[in-house]
Length: 261
Image (cartoon, rainbow, N blue to C red):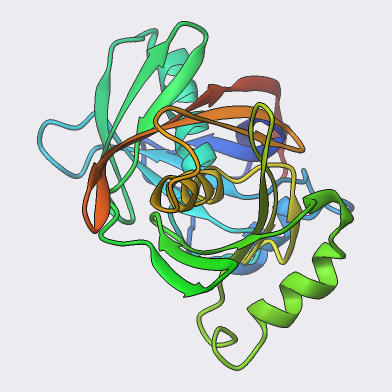
């Protein structure tokens, strides 16, 4: 396309995304340099990832969401999928519940008042790594580290020591620092692919909530506060894991624009 690309910018509790209507399947998603450039906060649009809304590739689904991290790698993104559904609703004028697909399979999305709810994958187990750490895969791999105060953590230093340590350097892992506060969980997240702290992370919020449920600290629904705002996680225990996992929170369109090719 020689006349540039139309895009919209969306955020869900401070987790921000470039969203492109790619139902014509034209975006060169193998061009990692382009993704890195567009997501750059100084030389591009700036975002925590790029969301492509594409034609459905499975019967009975409304669309396919392709998510690319700022480094061009692919993963599932909880808040990104909520933004994708909200954008799809705006594009089509359809606010009915739908199924969609992503890199990790099929999901359910619906409006809950002015918030968007996305069904997450079933979680087979919450692995207890040590007394203060759990490993949970919620579509993306996460470590949940229980601390006295997430705000007191030297997040970049501590998270990078784990993410680039011998166990996780090759595949990478997201690292969440969490505590149980008076009104639910409080947390901060370091995201692989972004390689920095993000104001919110949907799969990380889900991992933290399931870790807390597995430890007997909270029930369902579980309120979770990130630096970017509040979300809620629902889940049904299915030992050793969980099913009917849902991530619920606000989504907002910030602006629209065009970017040169």
